Length: 404
Ligand SMILES: Cc1ncc(COP(=O)(O)O)c(C=O)c1O
Image (cartoon, rainbow, N blue to C red; front, top):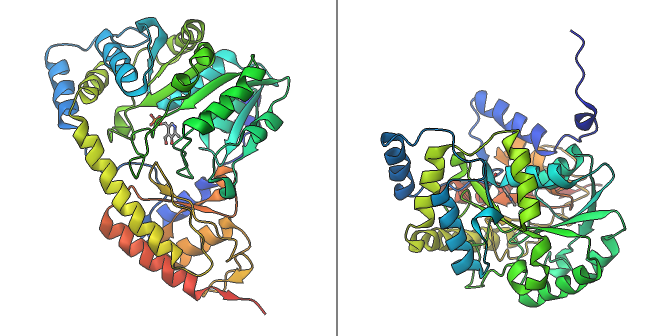
């Protein structure tokens, strides 16, 4: 049959992650002991309160279509969370609950982007922002966040990325993949630039907010610059801090007209989120925060071990991530070498492929995130896996030799 996809899909680049993931699966299927540090998925169980509440919701028959924008109980929990944890005040109509943080982004871009509209995406970035923007006819514009700046977005870099076509700025801190955070003065400096550009909306993706290390506080842009709140969409969700990736519950608070338009998009796509998942999410938001803090402390201990080990490897340079659960070491010292198995390392993609083939460790090449030569390693994995993965990476790196 003659099949061709719609134009909106035709131009989409294949994420660099796909080939690595496919090869990892094939190696595993062939019996290889592959360790994957490629996924951004907590290895903890979901809160028991969430599981219990979902079960109870099912038993009492809370199984009908929910309101598109979110159930009142979850909206109330989200409003309380934004107020107490972020210093942000929202009315129920300013909240949208979606199938994961990802659907919030999808709704927002679908509701607002016209062909040619630009979305400033600081690099390195989570792969979905530019892909979703492109799908909606938008044009992603990269704003480089250099390692020398701690992977933070500098105001002059933001200013240089803005054009008359800019519709959105995406701010994702703590950042996937770099682990960088933005502190109050950093955000104040960006707010100054945004005041000069009154047409621009900001997607503040704060999904890693509770995973900051060394006692560093997370600060919300909308709290730092309340005068800009009428164009900031603050995104969060249950996946990362509460280890609830499979529940598919994300949410956002923002200005009424934007939330209304996003809700209309969602009503024509998925309608409201699964009632049981919403009951679970509301219960998790009300559960003891110490559990989230305990998971954060585990991530911090793993970060310390992984980064210390990576820093000991010749040719690798690893910045200390202040948040999220990824290390993003630079490979500049290895590019140009050849692996022990004879594979030339010309890029982070080459490194990732060779590491997978020769050491059976899966990581994601920085090319996928718009900043090379780096790789992303997730430390959302057990200590045993991390130790073994780091041992193999060390052996692999030590085996890389200069050519000629
Ligand atoms: C930066 C960032 N934002 C949003 C999400 C979306 O999470 P979910 O759709 O699972 O809620 C992810 C997931 O990997 C992420 O890394």
